[in-house]
Image (cartoon, rainbow, N blue to C red; front, side, top):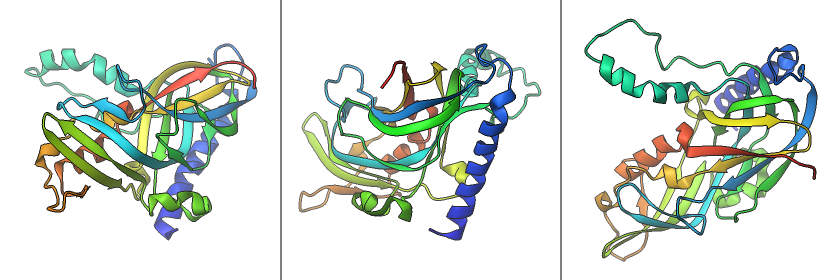
Length: 278
């Protein structure tokens, strides 16, 4: 692991860890007084609307996509008490359109948002097979503070040495996918690798909205939504190899740029809370 990667990751984790430890005395945590808890953290892939199988979906550009393999590295994961500011920005879109002809002073929407108390965390990176099925992959137990979770954040990063052979299928990439896109008579087999090196600001998926009452024994599930990653992707702009094999979607292509941006949007993931005991 490079020195830049280690320092970037360490700074982010120290910041979040301090927020979790210091948040025990915070007010307004669903009336629990900051009670310490232990819950379970899990991962799964969300179904696309009207889909019956994970990894199959239709994009907004009219392409039907079937993923044959898809793995990624993600984590750490942090759960926050404050709602996502991105939700507030969405609600303000109509008003902003009306105000566009009347400029006024505003705080910069790109300023880093403080999520308040960190109510829970999973402080490790994991390799996740997005096509592993509908059941949640339980990562293990995580420390937390009882209270209402209103947003969460996670990191996308290259695999580290700590993952060992588990990360071998990723070939050093943050995300590696292969599949086929169909539209009409067109058929585009593809392979794409995404890389999210430091700085940490370019690795974060910030403040995904959720409403969940965190407590002992429940399962917090982070859901990957690959059907949202391919929004705006134009597979007809790719050049197919003469031998009919899969096209390697390179960083210079429109499809790769769309994936790189979409995978870091707050819409790329969702969350679910499943209360109950083991």
